[in-house]
Length: 591
Image 1 (tube, rainbow, N blue to C red):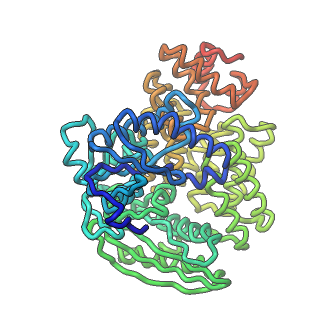
Image 2 (tube, one colour):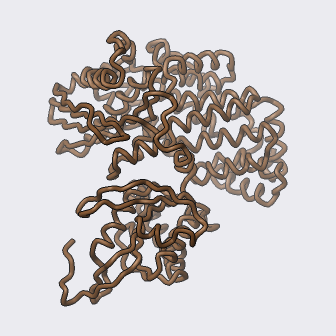
Image 3 (cartoon, one colour):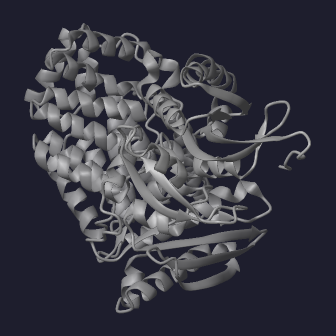
């Protein structure tokens, strides 16, 4: 963007706030009219009143973002915190809950056009800080921090100096710890630079530099398999894919990623696919220093993609721990699909599988069914299809409960028979056996999965739920916390929060049960099934109004649902189920 001429611009010192809505393009692709309506309401009812109350000036709105000028950096930060708190709490309006913002604040010299628009490094730095912030987060420049330090009751973390594009000097960055989502807070509380588990690595999303933007999923699939292979080595801590993908498309330094995820190494790279040929470039970086340990490119045909992945994995391991033998790399191989089109479909299905929402479940099932038509013996497709059926049982979406239970177990067992050394597929079988209440076999499967892959955040998650079903809440909480450590920014992190909430319910700590489930609902406001256990937690914690309101939200998404329907979908002990039933009864749900 060109700067205004000196003849038409005035200069002044100002605090600049830049913000945007997280995942706006994705929200628009799913519900264009609804998203635009929510954004308009957000601006009119939340953003503009708070800007006005803190004496700010809304300079302009740009699509999903907006730019604000303040005379006082203290007021700018207060305004940002109130905006994030309003979104996190919904301001009592359900419409705001699905939206999250990132905010950056800087103070500096700006140029002001006659029409009120503003330009200059002061604005550019605020924009760069906004892109650096995590969902629900606020990033400040060092100048802003110096002005507000000691004047506001908030915690800040020093993120060090960062070099931003087109800014000639490094900028010191501070993150506000208040108002961020739970997964982020848990990560921020970890000691910076601490690696107690030994070698630790995060594999970032590879950049798709193909001319065809549709190949994005192909680059993501390659990273998925590299992470899976690395995770099989017990001497490593490997951050789960769902957390590293939180950095996709963001300009964040390797040092910052290392601090936030608590890892020593970062693997990054790019993928170029042109017709039948593919080139993968990878580089291993020491996250504490930013020093490159090695860089290499790998060329081959699309049919060689799995061999290329294995070569990258071997290079990473050889650089970090040269004593690991080739035989161990061989044992890390998973059964490959026979049909690459089936592989493509599975990679497309993965984001929908983990959403744990009704419409997403239907789309995942559609894609996986197509994959299995192309390659009926593809174990990963079979396992994911089984888990999608399992979701329908667990979340009260099933139209035929006995058939879904039968098919969930059949598909999970068939996948495990074909890939009995694959920890992910064993975890799916463990989950299926939990759903059918075969707890002894489920325990065996999950223990086997974790012995093969101690870095599986999902296996630790499922093990946490299994301990809940065994009335072992304290161990369950430990396993959910381990899952969050391995994948703090995981879209499934809310499911760990749900698990911790249910563990507190089992232990009769109803107030904590409600608090943890509220956090889960805040993270995933469209998952109405959370109210099945949140409402009874409210009721037994002595909050009848909240309990009735929670049941009201449940019935909106599940018209006609009864207590019996919920009990049939759950796998808790009889004693715990009786308390859930009593709480739902007190909250007004019919038998």
